[in-house]
Image 1: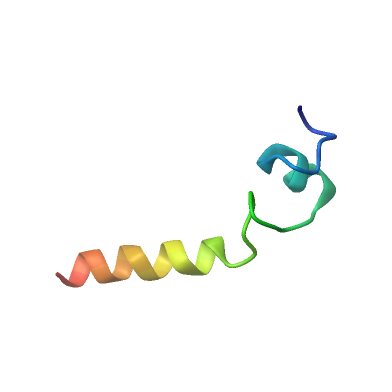
Image 2: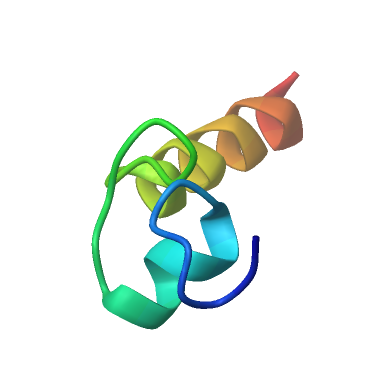
Length: 40
């Protein structure tokens, strides 16, 4: 398991793919969560 393993987050980053271990909309969700926390 490492950079060449497409089942791991590191492997998906290296291959440039998305899936369960590396969701496609992770950045958008993180930004929304931070904005919601700041308001509360």
